[in-house]
Length: 389
Image (cartoon, rainbow, N blue to C red):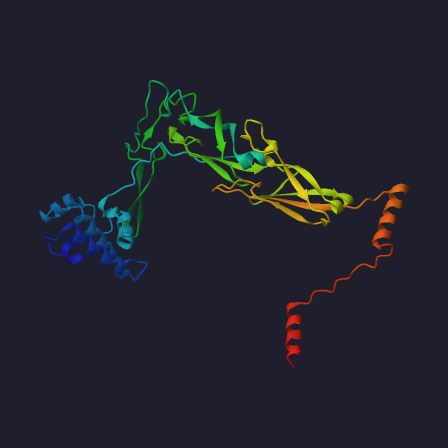
């Protein structure tokens, strides 16, 4: 080799490793074939890369400084330089590959996935909370091998192909010389070890599927779509790794009387025409009526709603604090919509009585009252401006 390696990189002979690396990165950015495709730059790029391959290795640098051939007679630049492709990538992206760092074997033990199940509850259960037992089918740690994956009495052994590194080098020749890349070992799939005698129960996975029973506490105030998280109750990971979480998604079944809007409950009651005219008292069930006596904690299961005389159809009565408890405290209201029923079938006596009532009230031939249509905002503005002129 006739060209001085230190001169190729432009560094003094006593330069440290960091100085050599910085000089190489700078030159590699300038001379790389993707930047300068001309033959002269390509040839110099190969020489700079070969120089760096020698000077970045303490043993090869020492041999070169003593006057020896660091390439072992391989033929100089471009023939046997054997510089790593990761060194080139390091020059452009500043990685740590030039120092010989590798990813290493990947662990067989990994965290498991989260699991999701759906649970239907009644409206009262969603409002006041409930504890339910669930049967779940998930992966659990194999009790035969305790998650190791090897048959009892045996253990994983280092891979003979990669010697436990989990990676093997792949060398490819190109105009840059020999480009070396690291790939996962095909024998051990990157784990660095193999299981010569897998556990028969889990086939080497370290986990098996099992059905188990869990108790989940549903807090008061949940609604459809609410998810309750059970930490570390999901799938056990490969290699007996830590389990993920289990999420229970709530679905609230429809109620025959009440409709939920947020934390408020709505219901509709039908009232005879005479009761609406004369007034009465309605006894309404509350949501607590759906609970068992011991679950209701002594709460009232009915409510007496007074109906004032002359109540009209569509009237709404708001009963404070009889709705659904909130997740963060408080409680919604119960909104009662009153619908007045007009009789559709009358016998002769009932018809005669109504006619007498109509005569007393002067309503034998009612004309009705037609309300004028409400003007739009622009109409009211036009009238207002017209009144000023």
